[in-house]
Image (tube, rainbow, N blue to C red; front, side):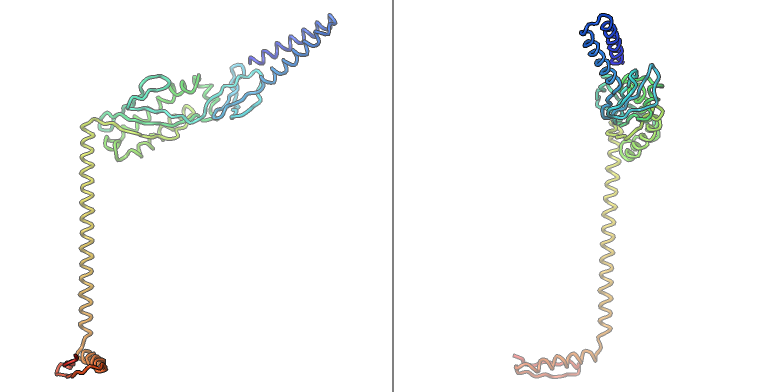
Length: 306
């Protein structure tokens, strides 16, 4: 708007100088009014251009009327009388830290305390990532107070996120929040926060539960319970290993027994006699002096053989 006003003033000055040049007939006025005219043209051109930085969108506002047009990042043409409100649509992170992290906007400690389904107070260290929906930025300007991203977060985003955290945590026990259900709880918070933030034209991208602080006595009790559960799982594992080892040995013994039964059933007196004859034939082929005697057992008896 400022450049447009300068363009109008430059054109008025050029017109006045042109009239004075016609009236007085001086050539100097001609040069001056031409310069004023060109200056007005430059001001008009620059007032019709707007540059939107990366990660932002621009919403034209003409005499208080918010346009439905949304400019993406880059160079755009606009009405010279339009003011373009630049709004960041980059992903932002809102952290509530039990360690007393200082919020950059309010310079106050951001701590979130929630109640479990047992009525116990827990302090949660959590980071929520969100962003403004680009195509809904005209609606934000028409329906919400907008000064900058930090003010919008403080007035409209934080209350909904804190509400989502407290509503979800009230469904779970302290132990579930502390250990067993932290992942599903974070996903449920993200879903509810996304639903609540949609009313303010925002999208919840992710929720990261970094830490959950319980009273010391509760933490110790949970740790003792987890330790006992781990010991029980270890004992069950050892019992399973021993059971499988006993099963392996039993199968091995059954195999040896079956083998011995099979072998003993296959050895007959005729087979023994035949094997004895074969052994006697092989021994007789050696050059050593020997005497082979077949007794009643049909098994050869070798005498000598030195």
